[in-house]
Amino acid sequence: MEQENLTTTVTEFVLLGLTQSLELQRFLFIIFSIVYLTTWLGNFTIIITVIIEHHLHTPMYFLLANLAFLDVGDSSVNAPKFLTGLLSQSKTISFNECFLQMFFFHFITGTMSLYLVGMAVNRYVAIYKPLRYLTIMNPGVLVGIVVLAWLGGLAHSAVQIGLLLQLPFCGPNVLDNFYCDVPQVIKLACTKTHLVELQVVFNGGVLLVTIFIILLISYAIILFKIRTYLTEGKHEALSTCGTQITVVCLIFTPCIFIYARPFQKFTLDKVVSVIYTVITPMLNPMIYMLRNAEMKKAIRRLMRRVLCSKREINT
Image 1 (tube, rainbow, N blue to C red):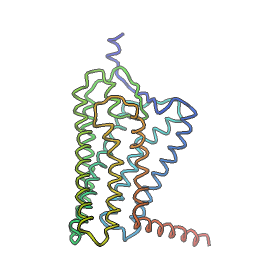
Image 2 (image 1 turned 180 degrees about the horizontal axis):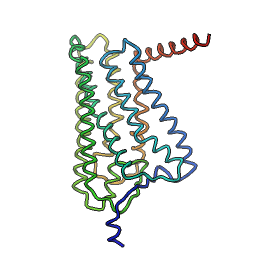
Image 3 (image 1 turned 90 degrees about the vertical axis):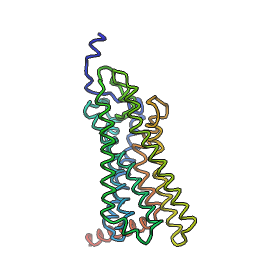
Image 4 (image 1 turned 90 degrees about the horizontal axis):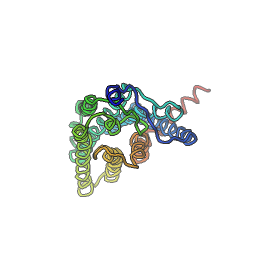
């Protein structure tokens, strides 16, 4: 029997989800459906506003619109499967679908991590080189930041999934989570995984910590410049930096908790996973819309245009 188990290839995984209570599952479906729809609405509001409002055609808002697109992609990798799992008795996911989910999730989150470095560079240039800002952050540079971030995310994800694909999966197939992720899947391999775990932690956790420290140092330098030397537009500059620091902490803190440690099960793992896969993509656009006066004004103008056009059509 043991020999048979060792030669049986896993074709699907079972996701235990957040809870086994049917009543709680229905309640969570309603709550997280609202969260998911709010994520789409908030992020696409930012994207459409930046596209339509010509005075927002600046480097900062170009980068913000691309971040909003990443937030939509981030939430869409796991949320649909999570929501259908809350209503379905069958909580299985095929082997291929599981690995594709992990690939795209780490692809987008890796891209986002590197992209935030690009946004920090943009802030640095805006504060330290204001007269040359538009010259330095020209369209070619902006596109380069986006492309490099996507390529970096692709490389990160390819390494993560490549390390996992080397492992044999021939026995256990139950994942104590609501989506497929590296820390849970790697534990199901029917071989010793210590070396692979270290490689995965280095490619994920160590890089996250390194980028997070670089971002914190960068924003500390920027804040020092604003407080010490800047006089005109000081409040707006502080608000913009404060917003970006908040977003950075929201993204990196839960990810570091999950990936920058040995893959052992902790009580808070599921809660933290919900935060950075479902909640954070919804909060990011809210933070930018609430704390950015120019964005709020642009959204109000856009809403007035929409309402006026509807009235003209009705009349």
